[in-house]
Image (cartoon, rainbow, N blue to C red; front, side, top):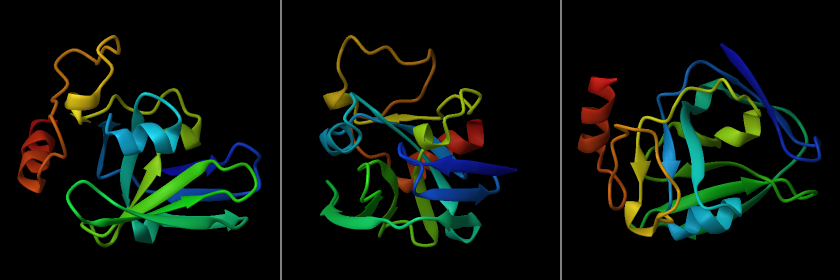
Length: 146
């Protein structure tokens, strides 16, 4: 399935082919700052399925809590966060779910960084949660249950 995505001003557009490998919510302080919201919602796709249709982006590199680098892309016109490539998952690109503007996008599979989630923000019932980054083994366990 092809999903079309664009930034707020529409100058940067992208198509993502295929289903996400994984998707979830993150309440880490960096995602809160990056998104301007209390939670970041993102999906992990194979880089091979992500294509730029039009526009340009700028990159900001930051160090994550686990020490790995995240290469965040944003629109230079409107500032919308588009996607990011964490060094610790080579071959994959993370795309902000809101960028698709698709209310039918599936329910998240996991929520990370519960330790910094706003207490009044309620999560879907039975959603697996982690106090910080879930390890690859923990993610695999969640995916086998889905």
